[in-house]
Amino acid sequence: PYDAGINVADHCQVVNCISSLNNGPGIRVTGQRGMVYNNVCHENDTEGILCENTTACNIRVEFNRITDNDTDGLKMDGPGGLVIRNTCAGNVNNYLLHANTNYGPIINVVSVGDISGTTNADHPYANFEY
Image 1 (spheres, one colour):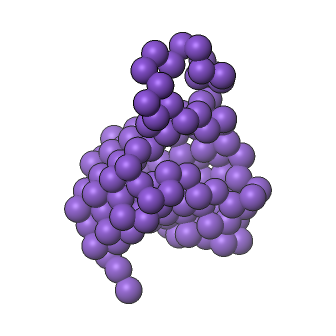
Image 2 (cartoon, helix red, strand yellow):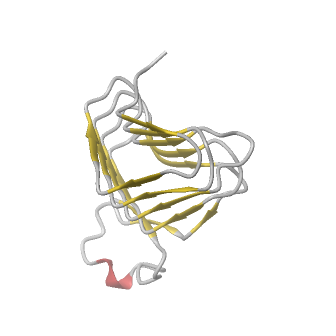
């Protein structure tokens, strides 16, 4: 099928990594109850970050920079999980989240310039598209 840069399962932590130019997702999580924190996922052939557990993701995805991936920036296939303080740009879909994913507001600041007047830009859990 495809090769992820980083593959993890249950109770994982992927922290402070760079995963770029892979033939699949930058980071692929197939389990639950883990954390993907402060990573860079750039120019991967599919998703930047893929949480692929369709039963229950329950993954905390926080403070990642996800750019220029060929399909989705951040994709959550299953319910649960928490998505906060991420930035996405240049992906086909920046955020593709399951209907029952918990997340901070997704703020589109493409071509805004000074974002201080943008609604929710000062929200502590905001995710950004730029």
